[in-house]
Image (cartoon, rainbow, N blue to C red; front, side, top):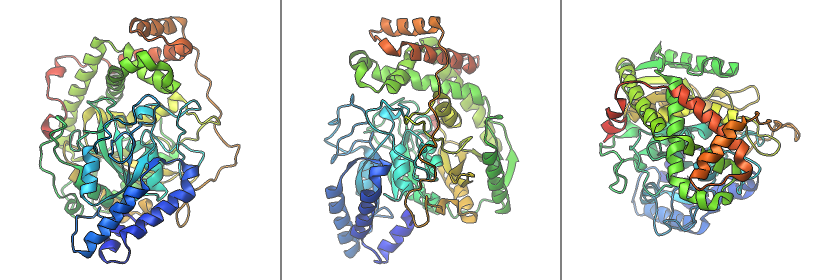
Length: 539
């Protein structure tokens, strides 16, 4: 499969036309997407018009940049003028903001990109996969029995399977980086505010990010160049100048100091640890200076991020949960309802923890320029026979991701090998505020000395289905619920006018987990809430 940058070079040499690239991409989707389930809505007609326009511009000597004429698609929580926006939910009005494009979508179009449609996601970017979802979970092209990650599931599937050259995802607790890791892609969560979120469906406003999912670091840089920059419609967006990201890829790294860490304690698969050691060795062989570091307050900050996500998302959804509880998928409404258990004191302590950790990370990034760690403690998990994934596995996949959302720092995921069963393994590179240039530069070095990003699901492209039909994880039995927890959960939601019915026991378990998170989060002391937020420097 070609990378975006390689396809752009072919277009400029006139070795291929944009219409030909689009025809190939749509033919691939016609052949594979009934199995993969990446698209919610295709926009073939407007895509063809965009491709014809791109070819006309090339013929006239008009060059809008590397995205001109390139088929791309976006997650279906980013509004587009030529297609409904559903957030994969029966609750959301598909005509939401139909009159216009999200800022990032408008910027893609202005750069000449060919938008082929809207891609699947977890409901409202939070609902885990399950048999009772109104929208089926897409499949992982590396193994159709496996989860492609979430919540930007369809973007991960589409780019990995070659249905598009790049896609946009959103990331509140890892939703760009988890599917990028599980599908063998290069995905970037920029600094909070580096890319505007105007025109996207919010989940947790102080944690939400928009970013690219591609095959290579160079592709990520090309997309970021287009979508980054201040937008008056987004008050949280950065006013800082946008650097030349492509130029940064070629700069020497001799002065960069890289910290290496394993933040999972003992909760990491052996093959992930081995692949990570080999990736670090590859960096050393390329002349990168590496030292061991420890992430400050990892577990408390990951717990704080979870509390913030739950509280903010519940605040946005509370009116609809009260009136349309049954229209949400059960797993989604339970996840959203958990935020009702976070009182004002819990949320303030979570914000204080975030500020305290940001100060500690400021000290860490005074000693090193970048931090490198495994992206995930395991490869993509196999879905249960009913299409579900147990809560512990979902939580395990997000721990190291949501830590960086809490800090608002740029984080890049890219391949570092494959598991014994052929599934992608990935590492994560994190930098200080607005240091995407450093993050991308180190990622480019790794992709210069390794070729893991070149791997495709099967030789020549396509999808893999390696497992026997019956080889799926059995559904996990839910742990017993304490009657007091179930009663407390039902009472808290009932007080808000939400009557949970058959969800009572599941919400009792969620209540217990929330209280555990609050204990883990602890209290950093002092008045950290009054300290500058992590994105203040970005503005």
